[in-house]
Image (cartoon, rainbow, N blue to C red):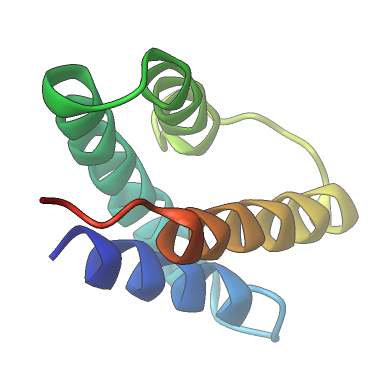
Length: 97
């Protein structure tokens, strides 16, 4: 389930590179914040402290209430970097025993 959520969010973030209505970006911010809080909670109980803090920082970056104004170009770079990071954690994750 965790890998499906990460992959889905990565796809949503990569779709932000296309020309979408502003409401789509708002929706992605809400979804990303919720997903990063969920992933942080999972890491807190079963995983790495480093990933826990990374997910919390990403939740703070994407949260829709106090917007971080990076501009379109920097947001595109951030979206791609975070999508690559999420996909890397999917493929580099150790199998659970």
